[in-house]
Image (cartoon, rainbow, N blue to C red; front, side, top):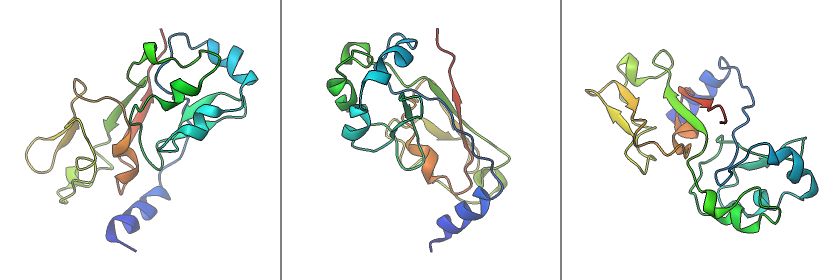
Length: 162
């Protein structure tokens, strides 16, 4: 077991898990999920190359960042036959990401760049060596930073739908 995995497993015992309702990108009207997704067989989840789309008990898709993040590959929108997800509606995922400074090892003077390394958009910046922050102007809400954090210090908040 790697040190990072050990810290992650220890920290996860103290971090309560809650299921968030984060929807895939490519949607314009969020009320359509309940109306249309019940008729579908979850094709969006089967084509997701990162396997982060999970179908809930209500038959609607939601994103789970526990294993990976969204590449915005468009595949889920391409297979959506009911128009819930459509490429023309491509927008960032309706979630914000924040670093919990109490849980973050770097904020406690431990050299850790776990969240920065997978960030393709350079949205995680370090003020000094030990103070990472997420630059919301660069963050695409892909979620790749979530699973790699050994202490689960990346918090996901669902944006309110307009």
